Image 1 (cartoon, helix red, strand yellow):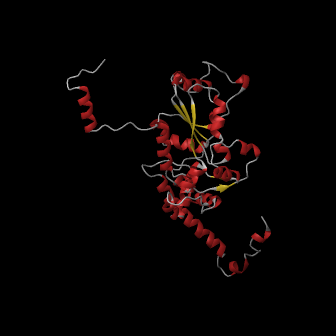
Image 2: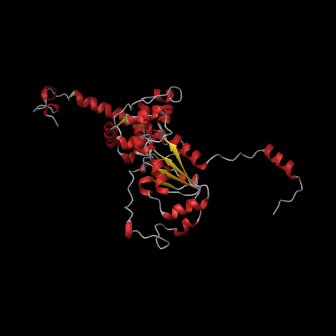
Image 3: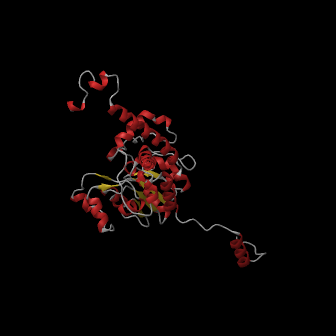
Length: 317
C-alpha cells in the first residue's frame, strides 16, 4: 500500500483530540447501510416461497435495492446501467453481516473431481458414476447446460430439474458429455439441449461449443436460452466491462447476432445470468425447458368433449 494512504504516526490530530477519523466513520456508515440493504435484498431474492440464491445474485439484488428506480424503468426504457455498488464493498459488508445469517444464501459451489481421460477413463457398461446405472437406458428428451456452476447449483436447489423433468448440469463439469447420455438423447428422438449462458463473448459461443462436442446426432437440437445483448438491454441488467476479445473470440460470435450486439460484445461488455432476479430466472427457465403448457380443462371443454364423444360411448381399448 502507498504510504500516503496510511495515517501518520500517532494517529494525527483527530486521534490526539479523542475523535475517530472521519473516513472511518464514513466507512462504517456506508457498511451499515450496505448491510441493511443486503438484508432487504435477501428477503426479496427469496420471494416467493423461500427461494435459494447465490452470492452473486444477492449482489445484484442489493444493487436493485440501492437503486429502486431501475425496477420502474425495467421494460419501459431499454438500457444497460452500471452497478451502483462495487463488488468489493458488497463482499466486505456481507462478511461483516455473516453469510450464515442470510436466509436462502447458497454456499459457494464445489468443483467435482476431474474425470479421467484417455486410457484411464473406462468406457462401456462396466463404468458406473451414479447410484442408478440403468438411468441411461431410457430416452432423455431434454437437458440443460449452464455456463455458471453457481447458477446450475441454484436451479438444482430450487428443484427446477424436477419440475421440468430436465437434468441440470454445469457445462465445464459435463463437457464432453458422457457417451451414455449422448445415446439417451439420441434415443429419445427430437431431444433438445438447452444452454443457459452469460451475455459475453465466451457465453454466446457456448452453444456452438456444445454442438461441436455432440457431433452429428440425428434429431438432437442445441438451443440457446440466452443471455444475449438484446435481452440485457430490455431487462436493464447491470453490465460490466472486461478485456476486449481477440480475433479468435470475435470469430466465434454467432452469425445470428445483430450488428449492434456484436459491437457491444467486441467492446468487452458483458452481463451475467446472475443479474436476472431469481424468481424471474426460475420462471423463464421452467417455461422454456418444459415447453408450452397444455390447455387447462374447464367445464366448457368437457362439454365439448362429451358432445363429440357421445354420452354412452365406451372408450376405445
